[in-house]
Length: 461
Ligand code: FUL
Image 1 (cartoon, rainbow, N blue to C red):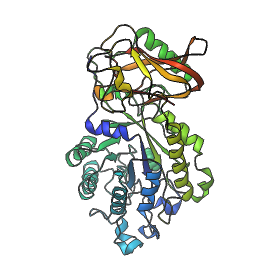
Image 2 (cartoon, helix red, strand yellow):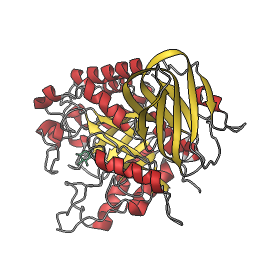
Image 3 (cartoon, rainbow, N blue to C red):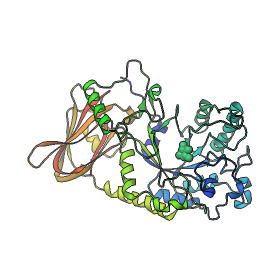
């Protein structure tokens, strides 16, 4: 069967794995999470604003793309938009001549990072909101400013929030037009949003993807954002799902359309998206953030972690230190691949997709046994006994995502094979944490695949 494939932009985006979000608006000064649009621009005065400090924090955290709330629901623009007075133009900051979006993109690029922008369609300040065609024109004009005046963007974040405007009518967003503008002006950027975008919301703001997480979805079967895959909280349901997959398969129905639309997990390092001094004691712990990494990136999703900006225009030292610790921790976990010098053998291999591709460290090579009826497997023989506690598997997703069930087994000191872990999807990356297990031989078994299985790498830590 033909699997949907990622576009080059989607593939590059997925390989960034972890990105950083920055929430900054009049809410930073009022202590609210959702401004109502009546906030005076005179509140906005980040005396020590230093986007290089944000970019250095993001870099130390290993994040690859920084995404800024250019406009949140309160409608205040962090750049001097030509289409409204509700912006930095009328703020005391830099006597109304400042542009946070400009400083942000310049600083991130100077630190070697990519940038993305969040432009909230829900605008509680703009009078035309609710007068659908007029507001859509206004929104598109602002979108074009951001798409054309700030250099290359790698993600455009569309929040789905929607309400009634001052005229009592619900705003109808012209999503197709919004997405088309991004494709026209920024072909390398992915769009994030609820429907029709390149990237889908994972369905919660806790930073956790489902245990089953497909990069492709049937757009019609997504009844609500994130409705694809089994939720981590529901282990019994996940087990039932796995059993059903193994017994019946879950091949897409004949003629069913699937599109490539991988999941993004957005979550804040603190309870709020915006900075509140009262939450200084509630910064997520290192253990929690490490856990989130395994439950998002380790489940074929992308982690978008928010660092709120303080009223002075800086990232809080605690938040900066925490993400640097996270990176050091992850680097330590993934420092030594125990499989690096292993000898491999597979149930089958083709000349153009040899099993050696699994260890060559090249992102574009893969092993495939071809289309097989029996479960395909790879055996990894380590040079000496080693204790394994993390298993990393990667599927060659540029060929599509087809693996629906897999397990990893290992031989114990008495020569008995034990199942270390079992899972459904693999995708760009699947990380399994297992109880430390001393072994010399492991086997990765592909139990079910909807097309010829294709693995890009196996690593053991
Ligand atoms: C939500 C918004 O309502 C929150 O304020 C925040 O921006 C979050 C990332 O998206 O839908």
